[in-house]
Length: 459
Image 1 (cartoon, rainbow, N blue to C red):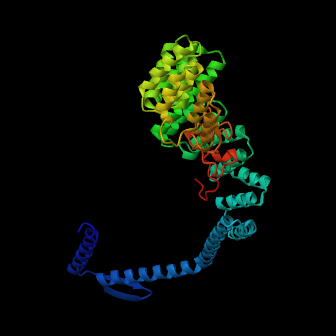
Image 2 (cartoon, helix red, strand yellow):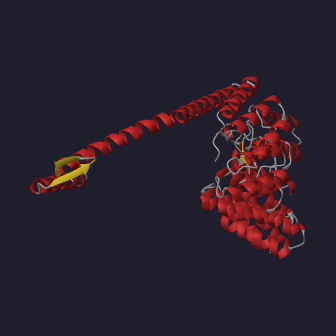
Image 3 (cartoon, rainbow, N blue to C red):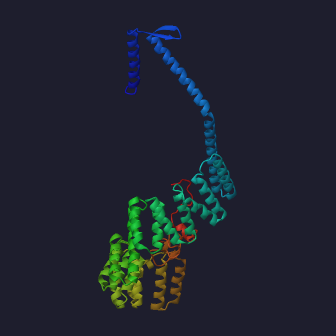
């Protein structure tokens, strides 16, 4: 009803005007060149309206005729533009198929079409040229195209992305970081930019800058809250190590304590904090930190760190400590394996055998490799039973693979946890698991960073 109101008002006005002139039957007299014409006013008004309509129609036709060439030119340019985009699409399809020659041909055709239509070449054309150059192995040509994109606001971000990928492949982390920081200023909050900036800053050991980037990444949703907490703890451990290396003992302990507060159950964090405490003459507190972490996860690295902190004690005292640790989680084999190792060193054969039996040595198997090796050592040391020792060594050879620290980015293995993978320098990529040695490994460190290689959209 509301939409029809203007039309109803217009009709009412026309009817009112018509009634008004019908009720006012005035006449108009015109004299021109001796001619006299007497007309009703309503008829004269009608003649004027008809004449105005004819003049409007005449001018409309003339306007269409005059503008026809321009319209035809615009239509031709639109057709060429549409054809140009179709050719560019064909070029992207050729890229996906790995056909650099066809992609280059499509780019040249597109340049010709856009040139004929006197239109600016779209960003997609430069991207196509750069990616085709990369497909041909022409790194210099691709770099030239990506660099040219930096000159235009519409293509600057695309150019930065391409140059970042090239810098990473070349192993030039310094240039990649500078370009990533520029991309972050250009489009704050872009997920892959924040993730890449964080990875590059950690590679460079810029822990303060990485912490600020991580905070922004969590705020922007580029990193989840749980993952961000774990990353933050890892950053603090790395920063603590750096401070300790520079003799900043108080700062090192402070960073380690903050990391422990964030991830109290993560073995590497607890181990580092305990070491810092022990170096500060707080051995008892350090052992308490390891025991607290042990109750959450009986990790073998915790047992090894526990043993290192007790090096100054007698073997008997160390065994008592380890028995206490084992009883915190009596059904876990790790505590008993650690206690057995200390008992063997103390030549307390009965205690060693008791703990190994509780770890599963008297069970049907299969037995962990470390248990088999300890049993072989015990049989040889206590009884000089070479046959029994060889039996356990043979079992060790056939034992299932045990977990190690494995990089999720490159597959590298290690016995020690580090904030950065020693092989690909990926940040916080080491996880404790059984390695899959049949899986292919990434040998290119650039793949450890989440930078997309091709995206046809400018933003």
